[in-house]
Amino acid sequence: MAQKTVVTHISPDLDGIGAYWLLKKYHPEFTNAKIDFVPAGQTYLGQPDGADPNVVHVDTGMGRFDHHQSSDFTCAAKLVLESLIKDGYIAEDDEAMKRLVNVLVELDHGWDNYKWSEAANDRYEFSLHNLLSGWKMVERKSDQELVEMAIFNLEAVYKLLAAKVKAEEELAGGEKFATKWGEAVAVYTGNSTVLDLGIKKGFALVAVKDPKRGNVRITGSNNKNVDLTDAYEKLAKIDREGTWYLHPSKVLLRNGSSRNPQMIPTKLELGEIIEVFKKV
Image 1 (cartoon, rainbow, N blue to C red):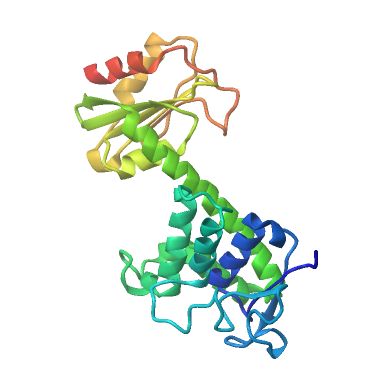
Image 2 (image 1 turned 45 degrees about the vertical axis):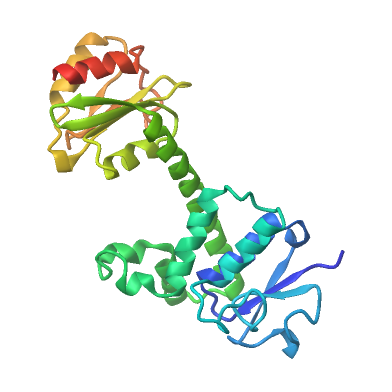
């Protein structure tokens, strides 16, 4: 089988890169596909999209994976995603990938400029689409290098979103309990995303115990004025074998961490830890 060529515009953005990434990642005929670049709106060797079965245009060329000939709220990556789902290469229920591509659509239509909360905040300069622009300023990479750097990061974003989707399910099934700061939740999981996501969703406190490693991590909400000092002292007194660490912020209580594998996991179960918090 002849090698496929995916064509996008010079100085590629996340939409064109994302479309190429999806084809390479999921379509067996594009596993070894190369990428080439043309001026925006143009086509490879001046041929119309589809003239060569081994050449596919994304985000340029006015073909099936370009969206500039339409006012629809879509982008090249979404058109590719829809095609891959239709052909059975991506599962219909891959919520993480759908959400990733939905953000690419928003970015391609400039939502980060006016619809996102605090659009002018400096935190957005750490976002991948702005980093891509920054990479072009710091040291002019070849378009091929930019694509490779962005794809590595898109893979990371996909992993994060997959963990987030799983965390949403785990939080929904977690054990809810009352504390003096508000509602809390406890979950048996090795998915660390549960901690931050639970706080973002409004829980005063989130406790997780890794069912494999046995260690416990507890995060409290600054917004709820949580102070884990008393809980730390009680848990350390009850559990003489496990290693407990209270962060100076007073909202992070850890019994084991990837940053310190020498910490000894507690033998306490979540039910016992919940009882401590009910009495704090």
